[in-house]
Length: 318
Image 1 (cartoon, rainbow, N blue to C red):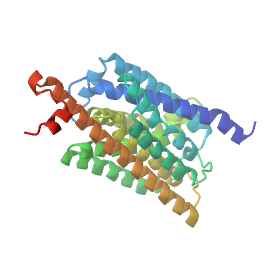
Image 2: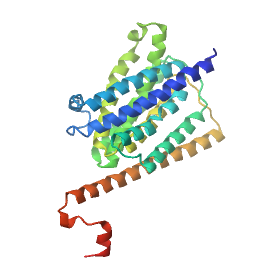
Image 3: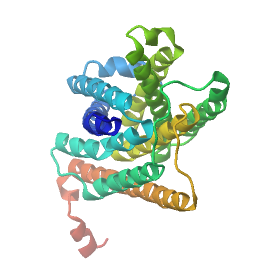
């Protein structure tokens, strides 16, 4: 069986199934996060509160399954191929969230999510991924990108601390996406080391980096889910930033190659516009949904004489 056949038979199904598991995990964790007391960003107390939720524990099981399948996919396919498939977690999450809320999926949110997935997939596939190495480049070559990614995380968290509303949540989502992307890339390295021997990962720093960066990213994701009203906007940003960081790491740290040229660049610009449009669509729709829900809650709790239909208000202006 050729290398390309193995990639299709093992890596692709593993990545898609893993995305479904991660979508279920995100929906379950987001719902559970709104059922516990609010927590400050990066406060581990949130995880203690969530650990008492059965729904959150279901999300953890789904997360473990998704990560295991991600390891399998990254072990048999290049990062630039696997990542576009993993981002399908976004429409999966929207569908699971609607199912848990006993409602139909919102068409605009689904369309916005699919637009993000399509744009990101086109962006990555235009690069025409090729293998690369399972081993990191020399340490000196790791430093520039590492500094840039660390600065992006710090900047996103600083932004989130200074603003409120959707902008606050999106800042947390950017920081989460960066940590997820770094973790995914390092997991690929660990998977390659594991194929060399069961003890090999323990002799390299990458496994220990995953054990530090991974939990930080996970805690950030729970903060993001709790502090956002709906899952779709934050998850759209996370699932966009994550693979883009993976692409940068694949090229700079793992010697994976990406296609270049004027036509490719033009296509990637169009794909980037689609991604931004999808995120904008999801964010605006989510804001409208939150406003509508707040108005419905206000009407439901108002005295009976004040519970009039909007048409009555228009027909009988005060």
